[in-house]
Image (cartoon, rainbow, N blue to C red):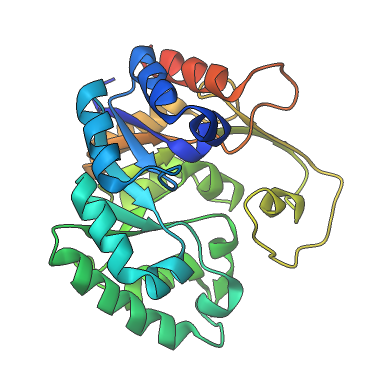
Length: 273
């Protein structure tokens, strides 16, 4: 396994809230090289920068909601340029802001402006997908429409390969489709029977208007679910990705693992390849 590995801190958010420095130290011990932020857990940007330097973790990227990006733009840019991230990703768009939505044209204009402001500080704008962007409009996926309506320079991908698979595409092949436009990629493993429903998005505060269902879905540590990790790693090399970011939204429901235990199982299993 050649690429450096970071973790999306949302995966261990409860531990970060209780003891941010201690959690970062533990992640470094496990073998993680870097982190992707989902907030600063009450610390200032300067404090976080010092913490990361002392612990030896690289600040790769951050997820910031589209709402916060557009209403707290100055603070976001100030904080994350101070910390030193290379990328900031929009974690999702609500329905009205997606292709075909009532505010899509406005969203594209805002994203162009955000991209310009971020680039002035040396930061690249990314978009992180779920499976709902694999709905088609006139025969084309919403996600592909988004990446067509914004240039490679304006917006790069942060493909979440779990949601690519749930959306019906082969994760490795879809990643290769965006070769040269995929600097970071989310590795996430899962198990599923049946179709996805609204309960998946309740966990992250997205109301996607999907009916409830009787499917079985659980997040799993890397190498313990349905994903073909070897094929995904080959695609990472082919696509020119710089970093792999592990994310597990919730602990595995069928196992008594904590969030930190899931994170450790994932990095151990990934490094076997």
